[in-house]
Length: 182
Image 1: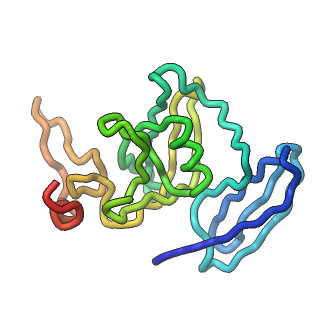
Image 2: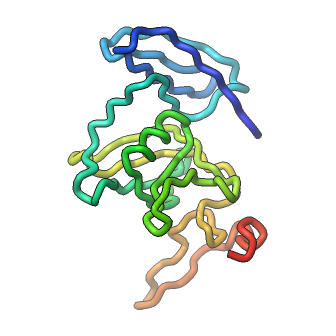
């Protein structure tokens, strides 16, 4: 299912607007000064986590890992860890602004939107940071049968069993069909 949403808020430049879309209730528009205004949209238009406005206050420590922070990706409905990626400041900003998980690829040295080639996007539902503000936990709704590029629902499909790694779940899709001969 494809979902689109256009959000317009006219506020002074000093305001940061955060809109969280959830279920039937729509979302909440809040300024950094605590003023709030409820917005309601039909359920057909709800999707993910969005932040509108030019300034996103991140307050995250990108300095410990050469400008990157680990991003633990967790299924919003089940709590299962789906993958771990890395974000630089731009990837985090794009994740917040678009509502889709964006990462920094260390091997390709560039930004990548999860699902840009497979279509298996991650719709952001909630973002939290740890006590040191140097790691984020991103709760998502996965669009597609799996998150792992090897065809599994989660990148954590192997379990240590008697000193060796065993595949402990079934493949959800054929990666050759999705990614070609990569």
